Image 1 (cartoon, rainbow, N blue to C red):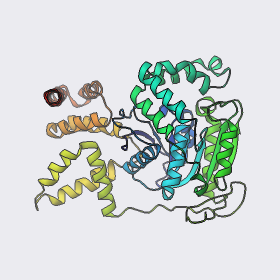
Image 2: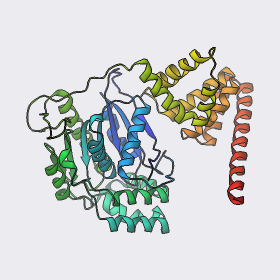
Image 3: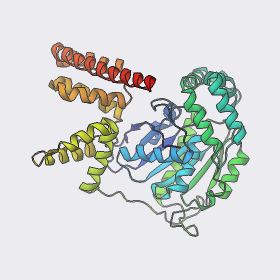
Length: 431
């Protein structure tokens, strides 16, 4: 097993509050960050909002190795750390909810609150998940469209909202088959029924009236097992209420978060644990986490983590090995301020920052740095076509000669990368 790479989008707080807390939103299997689009506007009024894609879904790269739900949870912590770290509120649907439970069990110190939507401590059976994995490997995700449409949506929803339904099902067909199958296998091995009684995070459980995948009775079992949790059932929806009733979902999640932040939930202690628990219907004071400014060392560590993620270990290792007494301060400056202060800010995701970096480097004529950031942009999820389009757009504002030189740099960079890939492939064939 190995921890997969996932990518995210970040919506800044609309109020502009510098100390806004973070909400992390987890998707259901076969969906992307688009699942939460209808709820993000409301949730970002007073909070930063991070939405992530599962492996092989949306912006996230395909999975190369098997993984567990616990490892998905660890990957979520990685993306949170990439934008500054700290504790956060979490809400997830189906597999996203299972990831939230894994976070609450394994990393309780990171969660301020938890909303588990249309999910449970054990979803389905091992056999059913492995059968679905085999089906996708044999016939692809398009073979799931009919069954998913029946499972995801309440009766009549697709007739009332054909565009929303078709968009979500088209997204399903674009998911990487192998990654989807590996997610199924992760769910086959997921079972926290014996562990959730130790969860101390203030927890809200939400079910859909017509959900057959995780029916209300199953979600009620989870609510009964988690100390202080309560269940709310949304009428008229099935398994993906964030598509069917985004305003209702946003209101429930926001009310739960405000209760925790406002101290209107009762926080006690689970036996053998110092993690918070609550009674959503009672009074008392919640244990709030007050954000503190990171130290210079913490900023450097966060910056080095992002620098390696964006530029690659090989590049950073070369730069580190080349440090001299004369350049040491500059390298420290770059790591802390460029990568630790700017690239970790929550207001923009890494894709957007790569677009801006390319445009800035083209404008300044910094061709040596441009080649490095072309590679970084590919790592951050941009395509070659998008990189070329960014340079074309910059030509209008920075000048045609600058853009012409930049396109040459991009062309040469792609050629070097292709040659390296071809050489590696040839080596594999020979060996």
